[in-house]
Image (cartoon, rainbow, N blue to C red; front, side, top):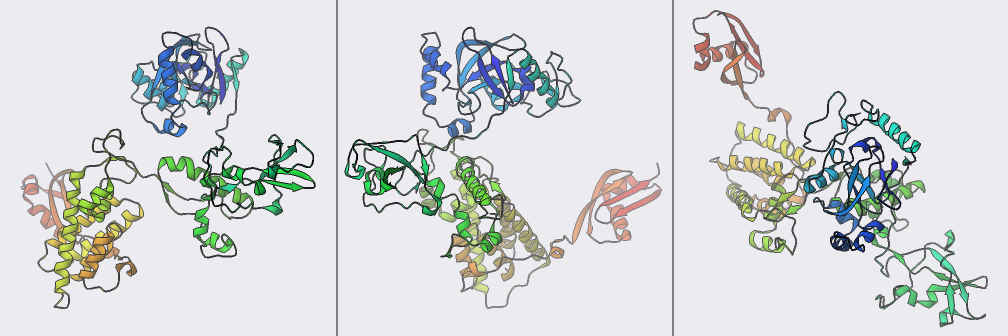
Length: 600
């Protein structure tokens, strides 16, 4: 990336970090983070904007970096100040906005709405200008942008001899111009941030560090409260042979009023002598993330009493095939878990570099008003109330039936009635079928058998793809078909219940018992399907006359040409375009095409 100077009317210029210096000529405003010193200066300046800026900075201080990054609606305040574009000399407005983080880059962002999604949303909200300076190769700039173009391309509308250069060429050229004019330079910025161990608990992992202790009087003992000073500027790692550091037994581990935490009160543990010198252990502990970052490895070998896991078990089970968790979870826990896994790999304790193969973010369930659920909005749906009114299975089924797993979806209580009817239908069918068990069993017709195998195939594929909504839809179609039968065979009913059971385990188990089974369905194998039996016996084909579709015929999938010809010419919608004309050619490809070529 690059650091680029934007001059203020007075004082030091603002330094903005960007990974896209090629878009510099598209900057239409500049943004600083609420933590930037200039924001505090504006708030204290007594200017027309100072009160509004001060209040915005105050409110932003209560939001975490994660909250600010995940919030879709961008907010900000005009500082009333302006900056100067380093190459064009154009005057640009300066905003303070919480989508800019002090911990990333310099806490200053050169905003290019045409080529950054966050800047685009902010500019639209506050009516700020947009200037497209990058276009896909071979195309021109758009008169009006509908969305930010964030990919690489070629420069347009840039001047300074940049038009026509590729993204990479433009980056090099612009940084060179900035260096020449002492207005910027190349810069490598890392996204690494401090891991703040702010949540202190007694049972957290002890940090294996200790510090020298200086006694006020020779022969003193810090364990007895003798005056002393701890030299925190000289941390010493605990020798490897003394690891791990064990927590001391403690009955009262409430934090109390001491900011150092309860471990600081255990003087016999905290202070120790070595070679005649006194030392003090670090009393902070690692937060729960540290201890919970490698649990998946223990899952591979949970009964091992000799080690956390064996190499054989780790190689057999790892990496994790699928991890389902929200975006917030990925930013925190999975980031740390991946860090620890790579540490373990560097130490040769695990064989794989990555801990997880696939990550899926489940979509958020919104309130019935389409907004994020919150107590302040009064739109929170209490799961206990839904379970009390409709049952746990109905709630599970509805949540999965609402839409794709990863989509954001609004909750609609009145729509639960659809899955309740489906549940009742399955229960009714199981009761009817179970009552007939032991008597002459109904035979399964060809259509039912085909639909059963098609449903097993579809639901199996949908479950593997986490497409639960379409799996449930297929089961609804299958149950409707079974309900239409005068006599209900046992095999398709068993398949329906088994396919439903992972999503509705309670109704599934009860229906299984109604079908005459004494063992739990948890011990049953997943239903299998026959690909050949999934195929339709008949197909509907369009009939073309001289290349235009004029009608349709239904015929056996493997029907011969004579049969297809007879059916096609007998179809009234086709015959009126063929009658009395010479058939020059009849083209038939089974299951694909029927085309009658006639003379004019």
